[in-house]
Amino acid sequence: MKTKLISMTAIAAVTLIFGCKKANNSNSNGVSYQLKTTNRSTALAYSSGNTLTSAARVAGGTITWTSGYASAEEIKFEAEGSNSHVEFHSETPQKIDLFSPLASLGNINIPTGVYDTAQFEIDLAPTATDAALELHGTYNTTPVTFTLNKSYEFNAEIPAITVADGQHYNAVTALNLATLTQGISSASLDAATKDSSGTIVISDSSNVSIYDSFISNLHDSEQEDFE
Image (tube, rainbow, N blue to C red; front, side, top):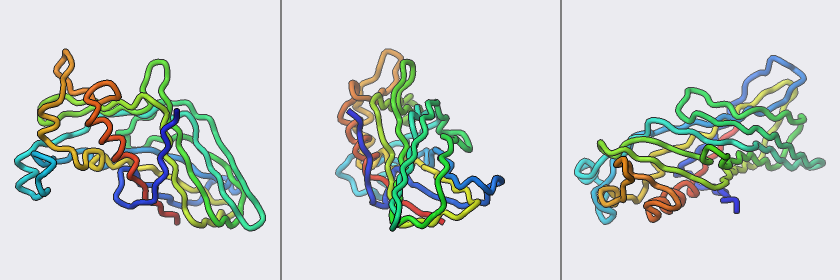
Protein backbone atom coordinates (compact mmCIF):
# COMPACT_ATOMS: atom_id res chain seq x y z
CA MET A 1 0.00 0.00 0.00
CA LYS A 2 1.28 3.43 -0.87
CA THR A 3 1.96 5.75 2.07
CA LYS A 4 0.42 9.14 1.33
CA LEU A 5 1.78 12.48 2.49
CA ILE A 6 -0.76 15.32 2.30
CA SER A 7 -0.24 18.10 4.83
CA MET A 8 -0.57 21.88 4.98
CA THR A 9 1.38 22.47 8.22
CA ALA A 10 4.37 24.75 8.17
CA ILE A 11 6.78 23.10 10.63
CA ALA A 12 8.05 20.70 8.26
CA ALA A 13 10.18 17.97 7.11
CA VAL A 14 9.44 18.79 3.53
CA THR A 15 9.23 22.27 2.08
CA LEU A 16 8.05 22.92 -1.45
CA ILE A 17 9.42 26.13 -2.95
CA PHE A 18 8.35 27.16 -6.41
CA GLY A 19 10.63 29.62 -8.19
CA CYS A 20 9.86 31.08 -11.57
CA LYS A 21 12.41 31.74 -14.26
CA LYS A 22 12.23 32.46 -17.97
CA ALA A 23 12.61 29.42 -20.17
CA ASN A 24 14.85 29.39 -23.20
CA ASN A 25 12.07 27.81 -25.24
CA SER A 26 9.17 30.29 -25.42
CA ASN A 27 6.79 27.48 -26.42
CA SER A 28 7.49 25.54 -23.25
CA ASN A 29 5.45 26.26 -20.11
CA GLY A 30 6.85 23.72 -17.73
CA VAL A 31 7.61 22.69 -14.18
CA SER A 32 10.99 21.22 -13.24
CA TYR A 33 10.92 19.01 -10.15
CA GLN A 34 13.93 18.96 -7.82
CA LEU A 35 14.69 17.17 -4.56
CA LYS A 36 17.28 17.95 -1.87
CA THR A 37 17.95 17.93 1.89
CA THR A 38 18.51 20.70 4.46
CA ASN A 39 19.45 20.91 8.18
CA ARG A 40 21.52 17.75 8.13
CA SER A 41 22.81 17.92 11.71
CA THR A 42 20.55 18.02 14.79
CA ALA A 43 21.22 18.05 18.54
CA LEU A 44 18.87 15.85 20.57
CA ALA A 45 17.61 16.17 24.14
CA TYR A 46 18.74 13.35 26.43
CA SER A 47 15.17 12.22 27.15
CA SER A 48 11.80 12.92 25.54
CA GLY A 49 10.62 14.39 28.86
CA ASN A 50 13.24 17.13 28.79
CA THR A 51 12.37 20.63 27.77
CA LEU A 52 14.46 21.19 24.68
CA THR A 53 16.73 23.80 26.23
CA SER A 54 20.23 24.39 24.99
CA ALA A 55 21.60 22.60 28.06
CA ALA A 56 19.38 19.57 27.47
CA ARG A 57 20.43 19.35 23.85
CA VAL A 58 24.14 19.54 24.70
CA ALA A 59 23.63 16.85 27.36
CA GLY A 60 22.14 14.54 24.76
CA GLY A 61 23.77 13.76 21.44
CA THR A 62 23.95 14.84 17.82
CA ILE A 63 22.70 13.03 14.74
CA THR A 64 24.38 14.09 11.50
CA TRP A 65 23.25 12.85 8.08
CA THR A 66 26.04 12.67 5.53
CA SER A 67 24.56 10.92 2.49
CA GLY A 68 21.34 9.52 1.10
CA TYR A 69 19.20 8.87 -1.93
CA ALA A 70 15.61 8.58 -3.11
CA SER A 71 14.19 6.27 -5.78
CA ALA A 72 11.82 8.48 -7.79
CA GLU A 73 9.18 6.66 -9.78
CA GLU A 74 6.88 9.39 -11.11
CA ILE A 75 6.10 13.11 -10.95
CA LYS A 76 2.61 14.57 -11.40
CA PHE A 77 0.89 17.91 -11.90
CA GLU A 78 -2.87 18.45 -11.60
CA ALA A 79 -4.79 21.74 -11.65
CA GLU A 80 -8.35 23.09 -11.80
CA GLY A 81 -9.36 26.32 -13.54
CA SER A 82 -12.70 28.00 -14.18
CA ASN A 83 -12.99 26.35 -17.59
CA SER A 84 -10.45 23.58 -17.51
CA HIS A 85 -8.94 20.66 -15.67
CA VAL A 86 -5.44 19.48 -16.52
CA GLU A 87 -3.53 16.47 -15.30
CA PHE A 88 -0.08 15.39 -16.41
CA HIS A 89 2.38 12.81 -15.19
CA SER A 90 5.83 11.70 -16.18
CA GLU A 91 7.37 8.37 -15.26
CA THR A 92 10.94 9.13 -14.27
CA PRO A 93 12.52 6.03 -12.68
CA GLN A 94 15.82 7.24 -11.27
CA LYS A 95 18.00 7.25 -8.17
CA ILE A 96 18.38 10.77 -6.78
CA ASP A 97 21.37 11.87 -4.68
CA LEU A 98 19.70 13.86 -1.87
CA PHE A 99 22.98 15.52 -0.92
CA SER A 100 23.96 16.87 -4.32
CA PRO A 101 23.57 20.62 -4.97
CA LEU A 102 20.73 19.94 -7.42
CA ALA A 103 18.89 16.67 -7.89
CA SER A 104 16.52 17.00 -10.83
CA LEU A 105 13.56 14.65 -11.16
CA GLY A 106 12.43 15.75 -14.62
CA ASN A 107 10.03 18.19 -16.26
CA ILE A 108 6.33 18.42 -17.01
CA ASN A 109 5.01 20.79 -19.69
CA ILE A 110 1.65 22.38 -18.87
CA PRO A 111 -0.67 24.74 -20.80
CA THR A 112 -0.93 28.45 -20.03
CA GLY A 113 -3.84 29.54 -17.86
CA VAL A 114 -5.08 30.64 -14.46
CA TYR A 115 -5.72 27.72 -12.14
CA ASP A 116 -7.75 27.96 -8.94
CA THR A 117 -5.86 25.08 -7.34
CA ALA A 118 -2.80 23.11 -8.28
CA GLN A 119 -1.29 19.92 -6.94
CA PHE A 120 2.31 18.76 -7.29
CA GLU A 121 3.30 15.19 -6.50
CA ILE A 122 6.51 13.19 -6.33
CA ASP A 123 6.18 9.41 -6.03
CA LEU A 124 8.97 7.33 -4.53
CA ALA A 125 9.10 3.53 -4.77
CA PRO A 126 11.64 0.84 -3.89
CA THR A 127 13.39 -0.98 -6.72
CA ALA A 128 14.95 -4.41 -6.93
CA THR A 129 18.21 -3.01 -5.55
CA ASP A 130 17.37 0.25 -3.75
CA ALA A 131 14.98 1.51 -1.08
CA ALA A 132 12.42 4.21 -1.78
CA LEU A 133 14.47 6.51 0.48
CA GLU A 134 17.62 5.91 2.48
CA LEU A 135 19.77 8.15 4.67
CA HIS A 136 23.19 7.47 6.19
CA GLY A 137 24.90 9.35 8.99
CA THR A 138 26.18 9.15 12.55
CA TYR A 139 24.73 9.47 16.02
CA ASN A 140 27.71 10.93 17.87
CA THR A 141 30.27 8.40 16.55
CA THR A 142 27.87 5.51 15.86
CA PRO A 143 26.79 4.89 12.24
CA VAL A 144 23.05 5.31 11.56
CA THR A 145 20.93 4.25 8.58
CA PHE A 146 17.28 5.16 7.98
CA THR A 147 15.59 3.03 5.31
CA LEU A 148 12.10 3.50 3.84
CA ASN A 149 11.22 0.36 1.91
CA LYS A 150 7.72 1.17 0.70
CA SER A 151 6.10 3.53 -1.77
CA TYR A 152 5.75 7.11 -0.62
CA GLU A 153 4.13 10.28 -1.98
CA PHE A 154 5.19 13.86 -1.44
CA ASN A 155 1.95 15.66 -2.30
CA ALA A 156 1.41 19.41 -1.97
CA GLU A 157 -1.39 21.77 -2.95
CA ILE A 158 -1.28 25.52 -3.54
CA PRO A 159 -4.46 27.62 -3.80
CA ALA A 160 -3.93 29.35 -7.15
CA ILE A 161 -1.30 29.77 -9.85
CA THR A 162 -0.97 31.58 -13.15
CA VAL A 163 1.02 29.78 -15.83
CA ALA A 164 2.28 32.39 -18.29
CA ASP A 165 3.31 31.78 -21.87
CA GLY A 166 7.01 31.06 -22.20
CA GLN A 167 7.60 30.63 -18.47
CA HIS A 168 9.38 27.75 -16.75
CA TYR A 169 8.92 26.98 -13.07
CA ASN A 170 11.07 25.14 -10.54
CA ALA A 171 9.38 22.98 -7.91
CA VAL A 172 12.00 22.27 -5.25
CA THR A 173 11.23 19.76 -2.52
CA ALA A 174 13.56 20.38 0.42
CA LEU A 175 13.59 17.57 2.98
CA ASN A 176 14.28 19.14 6.39
CA LEU A 177 16.22 16.40 8.15
CA ALA A 178 16.09 18.17 11.53
CA THR A 179 12.35 17.53 11.68
CA LEU A 180 12.82 13.78 11.21
CA THR A 181 14.07 13.51 14.80
CA GLN A 182 11.45 15.71 16.47
CA GLY A 183 10.46 14.15 19.79
CA ILE A 184 13.16 11.46 19.56
CA SER A 185 15.50 11.43 22.53
CA SER A 186 19.19 10.77 22.73
CA ALA A 187 18.37 8.06 25.27
CA SER A 188 16.27 6.24 22.64
CA LEU A 189 19.21 6.13 20.26
CA ASP A 190 21.57 5.08 23.07
CA ALA A 191 19.28 2.08 23.65
CA ALA A 192 18.72 1.29 19.96
CA THR A 193 19.60 -2.12 18.57
CA LYS A 194 22.72 -2.27 16.41
CA ASP A 195 23.48 -4.68 13.59
CA SER A 196 26.60 -6.86 13.36
CA SER A 197 28.65 -3.94 12.03
CA GLY A 198 27.63 -1.68 14.94
CA THR A 199 25.19 0.43 12.88
CA ILE A 200 21.85 1.67 14.22
CA VAL A 201 19.47 0.59 11.46
CA ILE A 202 16.10 2.37 11.55
CA SER A 203 13.58 0.56 9.34
CA ASP A 204 10.20 -1.17 9.41
CA SER A 205 11.93 -4.26 10.83
CA SER A 206 14.62 -2.73 13.07
CA ASN A 207 14.19 -0.16 15.87
CA VAL A 208 10.57 0.07 14.80
CA SER A 209 9.43 2.63 17.41
CA ILE A 210 12.08 5.11 16.21
CA TYR A 211 11.16 4.31 12.60
CA ASP A 212 7.47 5.01 13.31
CA SER A 213 8.42 8.40 14.80
CA PHE A 214 10.50 9.20 11.70
CA ILE A 215 7.55 8.36 9.43
CA SER A 216 5.15 10.41 11.57
CA ASN A 217 7.51 13.39 11.41
CA LEU A 218 7.84 12.98 7.66
CA HIS A 219 4.06 13.13 7.39
CA ASP A 220 3.84 16.35 9.38
CA SER A 221 5.43 18.33 6.70
CA GLU A 222 4.70 20.79 3.96
CA GLN A 223 4.89 24.51 3.28
CA GLU A 224 4.19 25.81 -0.21
CA ASP A 225 5.16 29.00 -2.00
CA PHE A 226 4.80 29.98 -5.64
CA GLU A 227 6.24 33.00 -7.37
